Image (cartoon, rainbow, N blue to C red; front, side, top):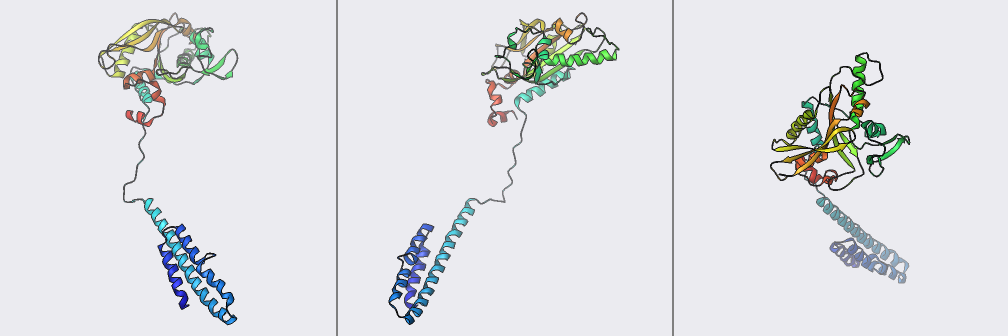
Length: 356
C-alpha cells in the first residue's frame, strides 16, 4: 500500500480543508467518484494476473477504507461544528433572573364604572345588573316609548331572534329597562309584606327606590364619539316627595366627586324623553383645564313619567321620582382626556397601559 499512501494523505488533506458539506462532496468525488482516483485504480486491475489482483485488490481496499473513514470523520466534524454554532446562537443564560409576566389592569371604562358605583353607593344607591338581550316591553313599552318612535327602527336597533312579531327581543338600547325590572321586584316584595293582594297600582307605604344600573348597551352608531356597543349608567330615585331639586343635588355631588373638582358648572337644558316629564339634558362646563368654557352634554334626565310609575306597579298620585342616563364612556373620555371613543375598544396595549 506504500504507493497508495500519498493518495490517502491527499484525500485526508482535501477533506480537512472542506468547510461546507458541498466542499466535502466535491473532494469525495475526486477520490471515490465515478472518475475518482480510487475508481481508476480499480479499473486498472483488469490487466493484472490473478495473483496480482489478490495482492493489489487488498491494498486498494485498505486505502479506500482509510479514505472513507477520513470522509466520515470530516462529515461528522462538519455536523458537530454546525450543531455547536446553533447551540451558541440559541444559548440561554440561566444566570439571568426570570422574565416575569406583566401585570394586567382594569380597562379605563371599567375604572370609570367602578368609580361611579362607589360614588352612588356612598349616597345610598343600590347597584343593579340586568340582561343585555332585552324584551321589547322592558326596553320600550314600559318606558312609554310609542310604536312609531325612531328608536324602534331596525336602522337604529339590533333586533335578535326570539320573542314574537309583536314583542321581539333586542340588544338593549339603554340600561333604562332596569328601572322597570328593579322597581317591579321592589314593589312586589313590599306589596306582599303589606298583605296587599290587589292588582292595581300600589299606593301603600314602602321604602324609597334608589338604584343605579351600569352596563353595556347597543345602538347602530359608529364614529369618533359613538360606538355600536357603549356603556351607560341609569339612575333612579322614586319616593313620595322627590323633585328636580333632589336630581340637581345628587348629580352635582356625583359629577364634582367623579372629576375631583368643584370648579365646574351644571346646566339643565329643556329636552324631551318619552319616559320623563319634564325632561332635561344635563351639561357641564369646566372652569379650568383644556375644556374650560365649553358646555359638554353628559346626561339625559327628568322626572319619571306618571305612566312609567304605573308600569312599575306604583300609584303616580303618591309616588314620584327622577331618572337620569349618563354615558360611562363619555365620562371616561372627559376624565382621562381621550378625544376618540374608538381608542377604548381597539385593544392597543400601549394605550390601555397608560391607565394602570
